[in-house]
Length: 240
Image 1 (cartoon, rainbow, N blue to C red):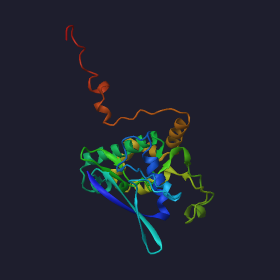
Image 2 (image 1 turned 45 degrees about the horizontal axis):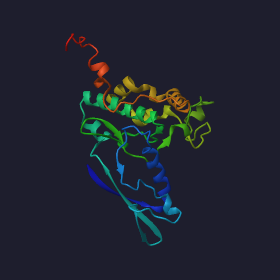
Image 3 (image 1 turned 30 degrees about the vertical axis):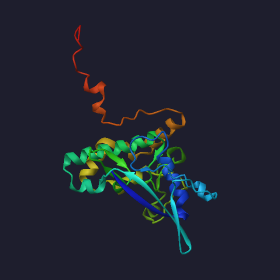
Image 4 (image 1 turned 180 degrees about the vertical axis):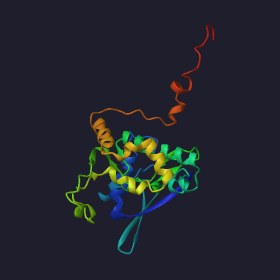
């Protein structure tokens, strides 16, 4: 466990506060890292003229107002660094955990936004957690789309997209080129979580959230559930 002091420009304060608020809502699953201290980024009050007790400390530097806030977080190994030195078995386990972390987040109505491995970490228990909230969004605010076919070869080779892109549009097909460059990573990812590259997966998760359905999320490996651990155990004898 370590303490981290975060310094931020007041211009970005609202964005940071919203991101931490999304990640820290009661519906949160245990797939995010970092716990903000008692003020829990309730710095919106500052914008109205009041700074809550125990909240961020502010100082004027030139023409800018800066603030700082301490929070605690577990020590983790960035996933991109872990994968560089991992064995084949460790790579597969980490990619299983990585995909499960993303799917657990979606169950809490959280879209991580930037899914690069550097934004995830491996704990000492080999669990993968997410710790970069800069581009986090609610699943229900995102529009997950499939890239439409190009009208011609020139359009496909153009630097600009041939289709209209709105603010909250997300194209899961575009994740692959950024995530699957390493053959070992690609094989493990496609084996366990190829559905993350399809808009249908995200659309279904969003629909389930909008319908009020709650997903089962387990804070431990699924094989550790009693229903699996003792599935083949003999029934207890009389008197036991």
